[in-house]
Length: 332
Image 1 (cartoon, one colour):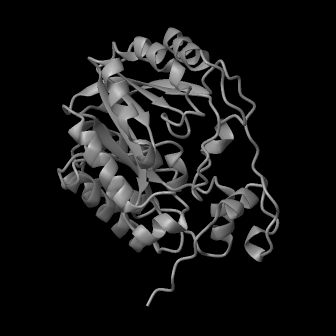
Image 2: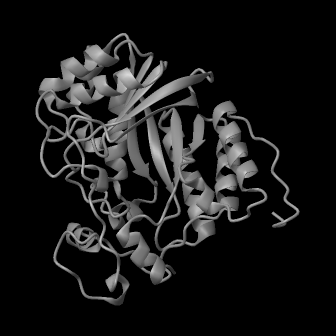
Image 3: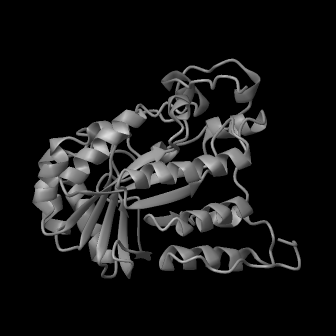
């Protein structure tokens, strides 16, 4: 029988990143203190345009603007996005200015994602007084994707949907996993019931949803993580979610690095990432993407690495399983 999972607290998460009182214990001894980026509140910290398979199964160009704003108040154990945030609230007008700056630099796109390393409808992150100005800038896109916590998916979502019309609003939720005890372990500040109520409300309001899922979670073996990722896809698709974006968990987070040193976290192998991608697409229940940022670290073979990453990208775009790569060098 599996031992009960530990539950990380805000204090432990902050201590692991060096932002709070130190904690005793071998896992955190000697860990590298993470640093926050020095950011300009009038500029996004990153922006890009890349192809993505849309809800109609057409490949379109999607602009993603990574907005600079105040840090999310939630202390999820797996999150390292706080590094790209501010310790103070941005001024009214700063977020529209960031979006305008990015749109002036980027090529044309059909859809846009406004990701803010937290929750779009956190009033301390994105000032509500800016919603109308933001809407003026993005309603020309076919789809506007924002990220938000289930407990913040109230009437404000419907109001913003109306502001950006005729664009389709899509809300991305960090479900991470449908393993309920693991949500508590990760200090997510949400339950599966919170998620269920949020997506039900959003779908009733004609707001599309996608979820982020983590592949590889602490205290699970690699095979268990694969199983829970696929079960989490089923959970989301059964509730009408349109898209599951699978993020292979990287050891960029101080707490995860500490767990890796004690053997309580194992990052996914390239083979398990490929297995999840194929099995997820074969479900034919909704779109399945694998986040390919820094994916090369999961494929150690110099001979087949690029081919395997290209295969995953092709599967992301076509939503069709591509024949596996066979490598004479690594035998995989």
